[in-house]
Length: 272
Ligand code: SF4
Image (cartoon, rainbow, N blue to C red; front, side):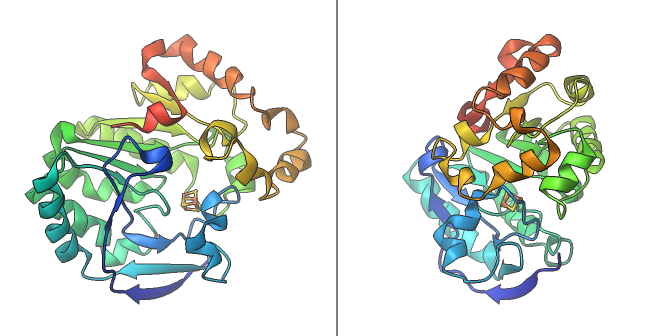
């Protein structure tokens, strides 16, 4: 889906870490809106989306002059105490338009100049590999968390047809790890996957986060239910995967190949 693009001049960039992100002092969204338009995205129902009165996924605001603003805000925030940043909470920082606009890259440049205590980069885009040079400069103060909800491309196409293919995300994890950037694979929200999924991951990462709608949507699964996601599972005859205890299956498979202390559940897997 092609999103309509808008340029905006934000007044603030760093927001206080709240709710699921209470472990962070701040969240940082280089864009508003998201071209990936995942069916299960609960941001669809949040004010940022509902006030817009346009379907989630059809528009993206590009934040102009973001680097200059972050430079000021970061300086002030660091003067007050520890700064830990989650990028991003309600968009993907590597939107397709980031290839051209380089907003996220400009923010990383600012963070290399004046590093926060920790930066967590949450994405599902292979474009993050473009910024390996900057990520390496942040050393152990950064972790790139790549969303890989499943290893099954047919399932990915069913739930998030506009998001990058799984193979490109796995390849990116490999490149990041080979370069020496701290990484993790994030199975969130967990989608139906094959038995071989953990074996594929263990070759690429040493740390995994597993989360589902029931633990991770901030409402015990209510937000996701109102998006009508269950019907997508029913259509595929995979209803057993849409259940608060379904994650046990994947968790048990993971701990057969990963050390148990490297498999994190829900919020713990996103903590600094
Ligand atoms: S990538 Fe993230 S923010 Fe974007 S639509 Fe998907 S879940 Fe929502």
